[in-house]
Amino acid sequence: MKFSMIICLLILTASAGMMGGCKTEYTHVGANWDALHKLEPDNNGFKIKVRGTSRAKLNEILTFDVTSKKAGKLWIIQVDANDEITLLFPNQAMPDNAIPAGKTVTIPPKDAPWEITAGEPVGKSMVAFVVTTGNADIGDILTQGNDVSKALYLVQKSEWGIYKKIIDVH
Image (cartoon, rainbow, N blue to C red; front, side, top):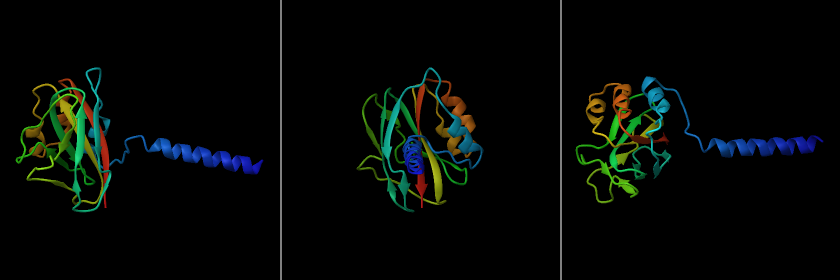
């Protein structure tokens, strides 16, 4: 009897561990992280797929393959372990953030003169891949260092999609 209970507990624990890997991990570090974590599209939302690194050493180069169901503008926003916002893409080296529907785009592109590297602070960062179909330019707000909620308000005015990824920098 005890043996079968132990087996059941082990199976349940293993199952819970496997299921937990499917969810976006949440670590509350501040208002920006919280706002980005809670952001979900309503009926106007569409799917975005992202492949890329989930764990990185300091100074490791990061790349992401992004596919959007709809054409639009791609914005890559990071909220780091200190709750600070960084607009990773678009940037000065590549201001064109257009993304076609159904085609996988690598960011940064393989021949790009720029890169995204894992940097300080170490810990978990939330990176959001947002595609907007409207004319919202959230880059101006984010590059001025304002809180993420103003930018997210603009996003919600158009048809959009989001994919959130936790990256553990160590």
